[in-house]
Amino acid sequence: MPEATYHEAFRFLGPTERLNFDEIERIARLAAGLGVTKIRLTGGEPLLRPGLPDLVHRLSALPGIEDVALTTNGVLLPRFAPALQQAGLRRVTVSLDSLDPAVFAHMSGGRGELSAVLQGIDAACAAGFAGGVKINTVVQRGVNDAGVPDILARFRHTGVTVRLIEYMDVGNLNGWDRADVVPSSELRARIAALWPLEPLLPRYRGEVARRYRYVDGAGEIGFVSSVSEPFCGMCSRARLSSDGKLYTCLFAATGTDLRALLRGNSSDADVDERLHATLSRIWRHRIDRYSEERARLPALLASGEQASRQEKIEMHYIGG
Image (tube, rainbow, N blue to C red; front, top):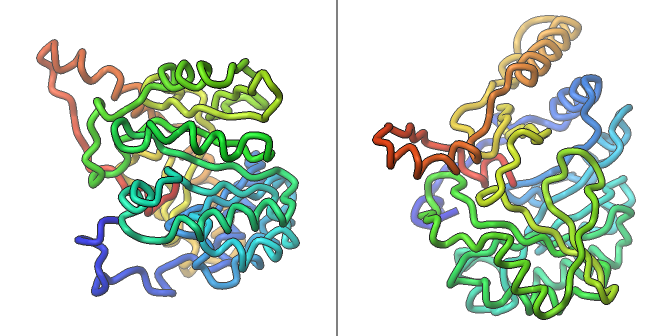
């Protein structure tokens, strides 16, 4: 979140503009009735939301929901990890792009301390989440790619899974350039030269990360390759923003306003019926395939075709 835009005087959403826990639970319950089994709380920074363990407890108790997870910058985990685990949170993913303090500061916009994130990871491990602890590392050529082995070395033999994510053109503010992307295939070759790897089968259809394990038994790592190997056709995710808009793609330009349905003057039964129908319609008619279209962009430009460019929603608005 660039400080030039999101400065001290920036007006963020007020409490009444955000969905409350009853509304979040209501949408989640209807989604579970349509087949959703996993829910992830993400950001912005979800641990800033007061009473988050209560929301976790409510979501994990919904019929059909098998897994509630959290993505966080980790800074507040020492304070909240035990309560979240007791509330039913199964998995924690912490964003960590570098173990070099200077690189960490650069990639985090000068916000937060590396030591606090590492303490948060330790706290998550100590809390004993049933689904484990993962680290998400976005790899950018010439910025933090040289430090990837340091992160892997730190978490080998710990049970923590590091997932290496290709640098993506999310939003409109990160100055993305394809030359800054380190393809997963290149990264795998670099890592295998240090620690031989062998592939693992996906745990479920549509799993985003391709899984590998160290041959020496030191654990598992994952690669998320949405730039070099798009997987739009296997996507099974939707994203609900804090102000109640539903997006079916990380690179979407617009979402569907569910808050307006929730806060209409209709009866509870009518609201549920409309929400159920809306969720079903959105999913059945989704046509998102941005990453596949991005892969075709050079060919389109070479042929003289005009490639449409839409302003995309920012990642900090709908989460990773």
